[in-house]
Image 1 (tube, rainbow, N blue to C red):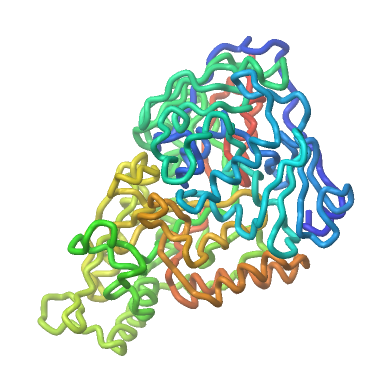
Image 2: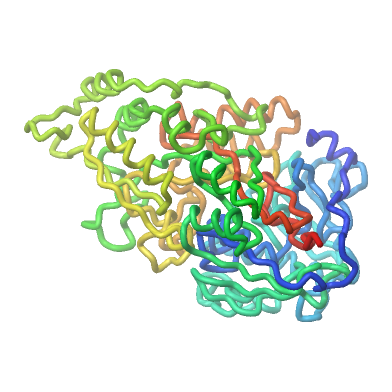
Length: 567
């Protein structure tokens, strides 16, 4: 559905799986395993998917995207449009109506004050919000009455569905987080670990990087849901153990993100306990090139900050050579098989937003060598490592601990050695790497390495918010509690102008043109982001678990309220 048709009022309604149960909690316990263990249950303080998704069981947005990418109301009565009066004719405001009678899990009413507070919380200039890009261009948020909230933008916004839409931008309770604004946000352990929510479940016990216990929310808006009385959410281990626990042993009911070779998954399915499910969204495995200096010789607080440009990755020729040396078809074959595709785009889907330019698809070792030679990077002392002006091409390359990612690291290290680049490999526990702890030196946001590899995605079918993450100033830094989505510290005023142009452009074809131009500025024009593989999402569920609908456009467990046990 185009934004034009959506804005004019052609809005889909939620079409969730029909309830296969009649009594809340009648189906007992369901068990979920995420081999990347959640570290926090506040998605505004972590960009890690495992944290966003575990929080989504409790915290909900006004609207989200269903399995086909269509926006559906959750806490809102309907999707605001120009046609129904919810979006102003000049596209500068959007007004949301909250469903009447909604309660927080503590029994207090959900009001527009909670929605306004959520915006104030994320947009606080003294804090660090991992989802700040959702609020890009927001000028003001007003509570007009108890159930009405109005968002005003600083220019016409043909796509006004950023704030409070999707699992990454849920509503938090004003009363619980009242003393957690700005720099105090990371200090509110009780609120961050045990958020009060509107979802089908509440947190009973949270052990960071280990296990979360949930129980059915007694104040959930549908008295017949959820079917399960409890969730055990186990974190940690690895993708292999998670897959076996569902597909072979039946120990768990749902396993997320089976980042495994396809033949491994096929063998596991022979166990007969479960079924693997897969779908392609915009998930891209890529390398991020650090545009700042992560050297430990710099004072703490100055490492990986824009005050210190990277000593050699600031050179476009080095970044391009590193990309040219990579054999992406082999990476796909080794790591994903049919669940992967070669892509040179940061936004590989939906198709209209992808450039489809396959400039990176063919490995060119000799071309990479020639490029470095021309740029003056030569092995001056015969030690096998290129250097220039006393700086050697010696890279610290980090990622999370995972069999496929370590295979990728080993291959890429070999290819880079062939062009005269030394590489040290580091792999970090995924629960820590994708966590949001501002005190940890090992998070992907802090980026204390030269190159790092991971994959992430965005909510919905329009990449506006995703691309807005690379605005100048949105980089993780000490003043933002090391939160921020501009991971490689890219900054180009011309790119920022395109963020604003995309935000005010309504024509869907023109939006695609702008988005592709922005994608190219981050990839083939600068090589600050080096895409590797367009990955399908692969998870697994027990054959006895019903109601599961894989969603590649929002939180994967977006409809956990509808899960039930097949009798």
